[in-house]
Length: 196
Image (cartoon, rainbow, N blue to C red):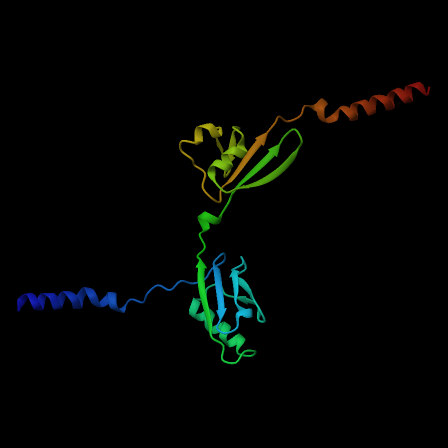
């Protein structure tokens, strides 16, 4: 009897909060991929990826803001929108792919060519690809100077979403960038001198 009372007391004390907790509900966010089916109306079925502004484009209804909604709330919203054109619509929405910010975020490699005085931006999908763009040169990782890429392969510091700045080549000398100005000036002086 004592064991039964202790068991009941334990269940009431510790199991009750678990029963009253609401299950976590997933809220839609940009980059989620949805598949929307309108039962009996295949022409309205669509597969959409939520845009960065939180919208999708649905046939007949146009652009709809879906960020922050649950799948159930989206189904209700779509059913009310389609009810103006379709008799008693039944909508089923599937979450095909949940966003994965770390997976989807590229590593940006900014290459500054000092000789040509140009900049280019590359998107690397992997750390190895980002290191390949550095071509063994010193680079800046989020503004902090790093060692050449050969030493980083053992312990990569680079994460998705980081920005690398790589300076390639050497800054041109005064003569390399201004030779034509000097020659033009000399030709003008020589022309003026010959006119006297």
